[in-house]
Image (tube, rainbow, N blue to C red; front, top):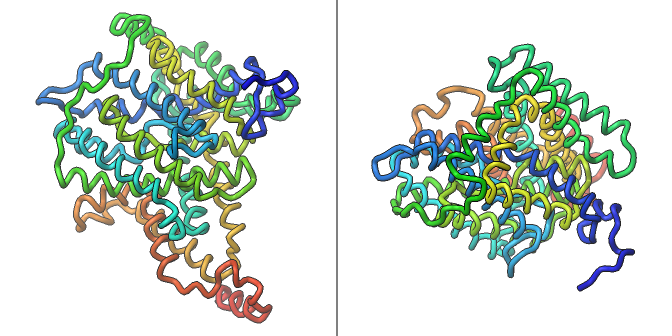
Length: 468
């Protein structure tokens, strides 16, 4: 259907639907790619460093091909989230990428045999996809306070990623003044541009900060351009993705361990998409959107493993933070980010160029975005009425236990290894399980529907109890 010029407006960047001039849509879409690009390829780099297939380790060429594939599947997943196929996809401004949640489990399986990892991903992804399609039957179990706790924890779990990036680069040791200076200049550039720019340009502050930080990083000798020529020598200028290269192998133990992580990933996806709706669209998420986002998360993860040979994909929290801060939610605009990812996968030098961004430049831009996720989660918790004893207990109990156990080394040392693999390094998993159990088991005598029945004396009694 043709669109008249009246329907094409830069103001549509703040609306879910509508056309935006391509010249304006491209930089906003590119901003999303720059926010997640290195995080998208980092899991593959970690997994391939220990991976074994048919008794042999991965070569540099095989790793480069996996990086190429992970960009393509991230772009395809994002497109389907934006423009669903059947019931698969949320129709929300959700950006997909290779999940960090699975890294520990994937490295364990890949070190044994990459085929075991692929087989477990295929089964686990299909199970999550089916759960997504049937979400209306169990969605009520995930109460708003559970999603709010998960969103808040996602933000907390990413803070160390942002700060580690803030002090890192390939040229200098962690925490050196050069890294910190470049990161700080990047952060200041973001803040100054956001403060001084006018109109829609104001929302491009992350892209502006990345450009400024990248130029400064070149001056400090942090950018290694040799990786671009190395990539061209290995894969050429244009290279199609290598598909169905790994034969899946199926093991009950591997499948069960990965299935548990998929449940945690599903909780993260619910949290991310809820945060997109609350932070970007100013409303609650619908059952249809939950169902579509989870179906995309699961089935596309199965395709990511079975066809592209990559680990599972999921919604990217840093892009949720970008949506929350910029309020740019237009699907047409973010589509250009998805197309850029696919393009980067088809043209390896493009991906190689993006990968030259030093960590400290990315850290200077992402620390604020990760913090905004925490703020979104706190706002969601506030909307859940934390003055109600039940909701306060769920939030306090899940956050203290789920995050607390990750702060103590060896807490799960006498438990089965799989328990530690899931909960020791991933606070989102613990918060999800604890908040879900508490929401199911605690009496629902203080639900939002019964707020009107609470008397001032009830609230006073609760405040006295909290004070004591």
